[in-house]
Amino acid sequence: MEEGNLHHLRQTYNRHRLDDKEVADNPIVQFQRWFEEATNIEGIEPNAMMLGTIDEEGRLSSRVVLLKSFDEAGFIFYTNYNSRKAKAIAYHNQVSLTFFWEALERQVHIQGKAYKVPAEVSDQYFHERPYGHQIGAWVSPQSSIIPDRAYLEDRVKQFEQEFTPESIERPPHWGGYRVEIDRIEFWQGRPNRLHDRIEYRLDDQGRWENQRLAP
Image: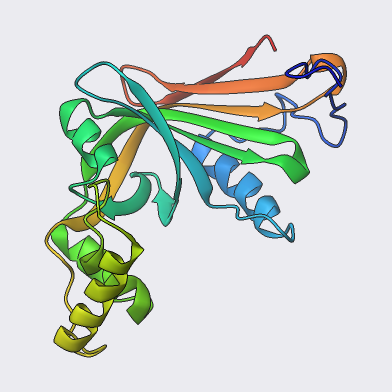
């Protein structure tokens, strides 16, 4: 293979279709359908999603985070409020979320605005996490430069001495964001790159309208 030449890499998508007459009127209902199908596929993490942000320098960043709940109000994920992503959201809270379920040849692309969830929502989820994950939220100064791996391991020991599983509380710098969506697109791979794309948008009255997009 010629170095850097990937022209030969291609795949035919033919496992499913997305029919205009079969999609739900509400995109959250449609997302629930697809999410449940993805959950039943062994070997994939269905709630892994690509979060896109833009920082104060105008630079775009994407990283994978985990969806922890969703409903009509929005899509929730959790992170360190001092992290790079959180600083970007503080500057410009318009974000994107993308799910890719390869086994189903499907993508879902979401746009909306991210807002911090109430403290009690973050508290509830934090106390549902495994103890090791709770300690990790205290240990990591996320996105900051650290000297080495030993720095983290030493801080684990420090906070394990400070907190028991019964006494640990949520760090004030850690919590959730809810992405309130105004646009969501469902993409289904089809043969010959003639993919199915159905997009939902909120109108001025807060009602969802959907339309088919060219692939």
